[in-house]
Image (cartoon, rainbow, N blue to C red; front, top):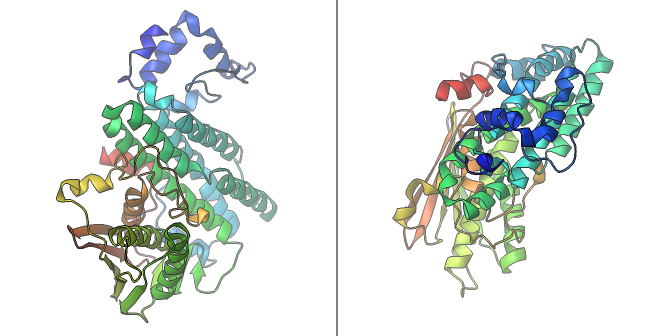
Amino acid sequence: MQRLLHCTNRTSQELLRLHVRSTSCKRFAAATAGQRGEDTKPPPGLNFYDQKIVRPWTEIATTDNIGMKFLFDSGLGRISPVDSAQILARNLPARLLFCIQQFLQLPFILGCNPHFKRVNRAYLDAYKEAASFTAITNDHQEQEYVELLKSFVDDHMDVISNLAQGVRDCLQHHSNSAHYLDSHMDAVVRARISIRLLVEHQIALHNKRKNHAGVVHLKFNPVKVARKCIRDSQALCTRKYGIAPEVEINGHVDAEACYVVAHLEYILMELLKNSFRATVEHHPDQMELPPVRLTLSKTEDQLAIRISDEGGGFEPSIGTLMWSWSYTTVDNEAVDDGLGALAQQHDVILAGLGVGLPMTQCYASYFGGNIEVRSMYGLGSDAFVTLPMLHEQHPHMVWSPDDQVSRQ
């Protein structure tokens, strides 16, 4: 075991082999005895790598190529919920397996973080349950599967906050771990978004809503979504500071768009939250704050949104650091006070954990969009969001583990 404690740069696969071979780790080996038909219940007090599932760790997580056409076909009733569930049941275990593998690729000392362990355990439990659905052939089985998916959504509600806290903990004690953490968070969060998208899409097939194809809203007014986000952000800002800036909306205010509204809401809430905080803190003694301005532009293929504030901007030295999961402007002792505590169903997490902007970029880029933030230091910032309009022939696939392999 002493050998393991000094191998912080080894991958977990290497450490796992060392760990099992070690004569001092017989208790761990017993936890993997399920492969030999023995009791798989692990004894208490074991470390991060004590898992009930071992063999799938080294398997390649491959999935079908699921494109926008699947979301539209299933959402518009061209294929039945049973057929849709069959496709999801075939692909979900591999996507969960990919998340498990990301934790095993962390250096040992980072993988021992209790917040990371909690998330990994959630994915292990979900993998076991998802893999148990091998055949869905009728409506009753599909309904049972949907109930399982709903439990996944509830059980994984705090995954992002746990990941964020894990990153903070690791950076506090291991300052040279940023590279590992950024790579880990990129992979896990993108996989999580794809899992959440497919799971909530299957659930949404049972909640028929006008102008919807499952989770895809076929025709909505972005300004209405923006106004809801503004109200929620103002309420949170007022609760913390006692005051909140007004928001001026202009541009193509009557435009209609086709997108996953939950993703757009997350992006707008996070950017508005940042602008509100910056504005209030940059004008601490003013009873009348300068407004935040939100401008929309809509073309046939793209929705563009600009959010401008007079919150003082940020120093040029920050540069691309703002997109790192390892960067935060809040000290380690800071805890959430409500300003960042937004709608839980959209994975919005606590302010000051340092994952807000990286999360928005993940959501924006998921279907090929982008976010840029430009600063005029001492004056304010402009955030530019560009999102493609979704349609059946949209070239971007729902993310899969194969995409991550191709990027490496």
